[in-house]
Length: 180
Image 1 (cartoon, rainbow, N blue to C red):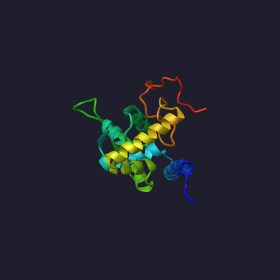
Image 2 (image 1 turned 60 degrees about the vertical axis):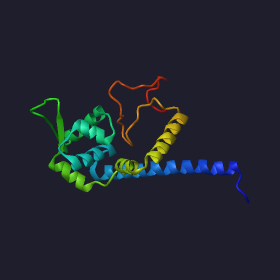
Image 3 (image 1 turned 30 degrees about the horizontal axis):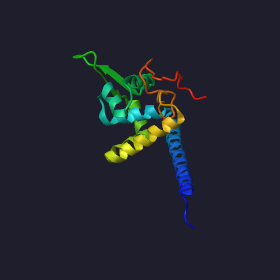
Image 4 (image 1 turned 30 degrees about the vertical axis):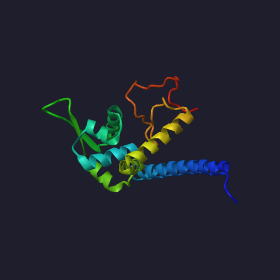
């Protein structure tokens, strides 16, 4: 029996929903594992992994490598510093420059925590061809449009933190970013 265009479309829609379910499930699983092992959020583990690869690293460079706004990264670093997992140092030559490195406790944590979904996603996206990256980006932009949340500040994966500068949320619809 030949598949009709309507049946084929239904199969594609089901495939999209199943793939979204898979993505959400794996992101949740990776984050819960990191939280269980180290008591940290996914973004905190991700920051520590990037710092471990490049320390000492300037806070602005860390934000760029994580594709996050610097104020978001500062909030993550504040919590990691309170837990004595990272240390920030202000440059003597240029007081505006702040670098961050792992403490001994931070290095021990990084050696124990598993890879997290953000790191895997970033690595995979960087390996895509320009055409494939545009396809993925365009498709996700459309999904966001379907849900009507284009102006919602982008929350970090499974974290209460938002990737937006403090007080700079651009939502023409007046929504607060909360889903009700």
